[in-house]
Image (tube, rainbow, N blue to C red; front, top):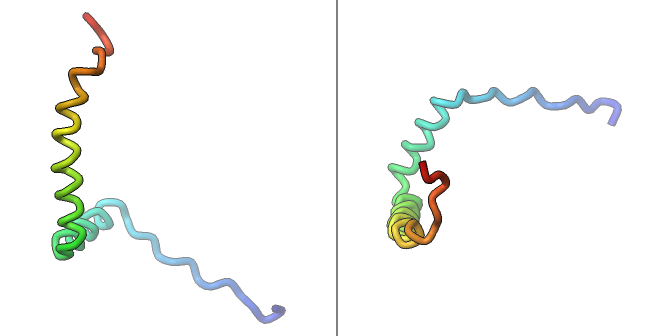
Amino acid sequence: MASWHPAEPAVREQVLPGLLSGMRYVRSAPGIRRILIRCVLFAFPGCALWGPCCPPLRTT
């Protein structure tokens, strides 16, 4: 324990390059892309069904 030193901190990735690399990963990973497409295809019709049930936030 006396000779232990913490590891060097990891280099942080900036936000925009991180998002772009994530999109490249999703584009090249067919399993994840399939899951995201299923989520979108489920969410949009669900929003269309629940939308008329919710009262408007403002009437003016």
